[in-house]
Length: 402
Ligand SMILES: Cc1ncc(COP(=O)(O)O)c(C=O)c1O
Image 1 (cartoon, rainbow, N blue to C red):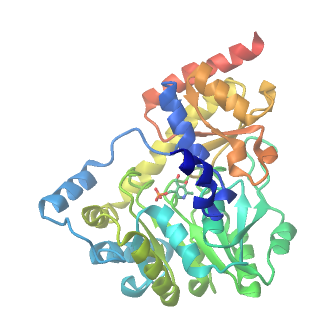
Image 2 (image 1 turned 135 degrees about the vertical axis):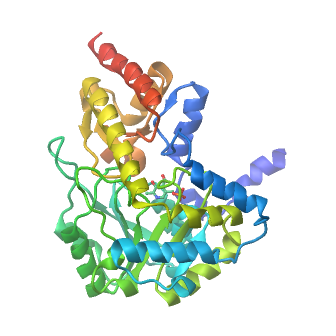
């Protein structure tokens, strides 16, 4: 054992030295340790829809228990192609353009491994969903960050500087990752913003990898626009999506890519050797889920709007400055009023003394300093959970006064 400890360093790849463990998943462990309410990790604490659970049980009962086709069950690929055609007007061949993966997490890393070479750069808006940094590094690419600037007032939008975005594109740029609706900011990219990205992708011959996992979770009349639906983008867009958020089944691990055929071939090769395939019975249930009536999606968004409007006033009353999300199910907050040295000290205090787990803002930035006065809360939780969190959070204000 002693020898192992001494030589451990030599057993590890250099790749893993360039990123740390997930802060979000670590906060979930902290929540369990302190018996705190977990508003850190974005998983619902309420049941998944009964009809899709039944579909999964039926699939297992019908012995759909062996490997599915490596790039995904035909029924699910068909439903995916049909849904994006109906909702976004994008024609997709399920035989040549869809790859079902183990969650959109695997879909993203398989895509990057399929398209990146050493020395390539991947443009990422920050704050960003923490996986994108390690994903780029694992695929040999260098992430290049473009800032999203927080709104000046509670109702404003996160924006980016067009010149900064343009400056991030050059001859080594392979791809840009766009996540809309966005985690952690709740920003929903407008058509104009997506067209700006499109124009740069065309000018510099760059791919757009769009993570649209929150596409159905929208507020205040926001509209989701798929990058692939923009003129000129079908041949250079990889759309990443999955069941986790739309159907409240983050543990099922079913996601997918939609990409041009040649890129799909490459993604399928990576995917096959990484995981062989996503869970077969859950893919069958996925095919049923994607055919739920449109009322399902209306209710989903409305349920999250209600939860947003439950948590945001509670946070505001507790002294947080909230940036109102237009989509997804997180709220980014500014904690500078509390006078803590940084977000790590604050989230530690929050989980251990107040009993609420949240994610330190620095985990969404390359330079931790940029997020040291920000904290993210997830509101994909039951009313009772949010009520109890609000009760506990009200003590933060009291602690500040004392
Ligand atoms: C933007 C974004 N993409 C991907 C994921 C992971 O999705 P999946 O469960 O499909 O792997 C998350 C989960 O929080 C997310 O926020």
